[in-house]
Length: 342
Picture 1 (cartoon, rainbow, N blue to C red):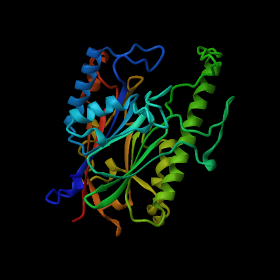
Picture 2: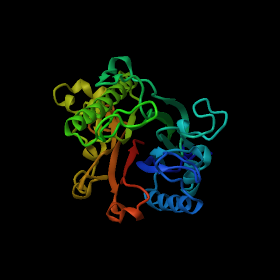
Picture 3: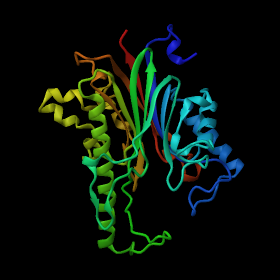
Picture 4: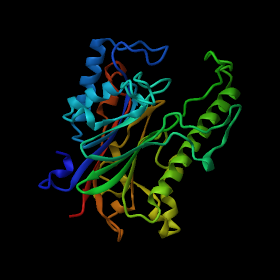
């Protein structure tokens, strides 16, 4: 029985996003310069992630930095889901997978979704939309996502909802390497470092623009809601984040509501009560919100097209105060409670 079959349940659900910090199967090398998890290390990682996520009581969990579908399935089961509730095509350990041939993610981790709801459609945004392709300095056209976003359409209480989770290119400087992966630039040269950071910014901007174009295609002249969430690697008001949402455009053109997205934390019914503890990451000693959760117009209570609303948004980040060795992830968890109209 799917979750949406339970007609006695209130028409509300929790949705969360969590970066799982290189969650991989035990005894498998994911980065050449990183040690594999021993079985004991893996058990500690799994138990720690379970403890963190269990408190969110989420019905939908978007995840980032996962290397193996088996690991995500273990986490799903430990949280009370079934293995088939975990969706992560680009980290598949199924030998029949056309993406991975069963080897899990390669070179970079994948994004995924765990959901109790019936799955109606699954797709990957692998190619940068042609209109968003730009030339990266010293590299050339950026035509493919580094970590392709996952689109999953679900049936939540007989209401189809499109969920997109993404993990955009980080702010970390992108230095040039040769075919063997050896650095060919001086990382200590401030002039080169600036150019390397510019490359990262351009990559993130192209990814954001491509996601935006896909969202417009989904939302234009439809009344089916969409939720975008994940590790966007920049704050809510940044240029790259706003490229994906265009929230500010609504101030000048109300018709833009049809294709814009809105920060769940700003449109929640209890807005303001968590503002002093809202952060999901600590970057160079400064707390910031780079894990984002956005909703479409259908979750704005004042909209004539509203199908529900964001009741509350919570941040789970106490573990970011722990010593680094004790953390199972270096990101906080953001969770929204969404109530559908009766």
